[in-house]
Length: 195
Image (cartoon, rainbow, N blue to C red; front, side, top):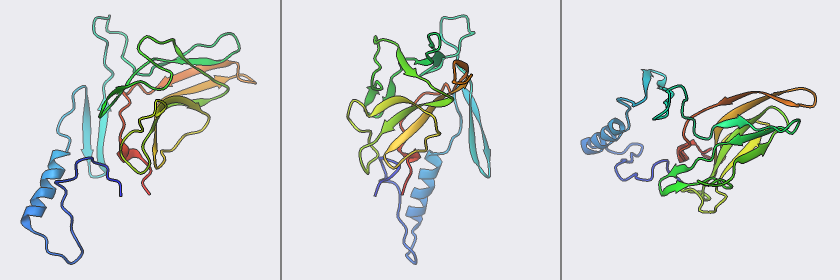
């Protein structure tokens, strides 16, 4: 059985018809309180009976004019005449074991380019070890890819949307619009498709 948290020692277990002690109820209440949002730096949140919504403010880069917002994995048009391409900013992913670069990206590497043939989505794929909450250790466990379809998370793979691409022409010969998500990519095994 896989768990969403790596540390589950404070999580009490209850059985049907079993006795519930005040110690176990207090442990459960403490665990819930420790995971409750109380504030957010660089944004705000709204708590309703249906859940909590986070609103992240776009941040400005230090030392600049204040007009450019930071955007990890920023996708820009890199087309050459009728050859449609996008460039994805070389950006590392912060994991529980440190910083890892997506396959094909590095700090001083060449621009990361993807060929585009139609409207599509740009994703960062995070591959987990089979039946575990730990990222795979292979160099291609973190990849940036384009898909013509929306990709749902799988049992062992998480797809984080980076941008959407809109094209025009027949066949598509122009990128009309790129909508960047502009959020950092952080592995979250709770997003996997639990079976």
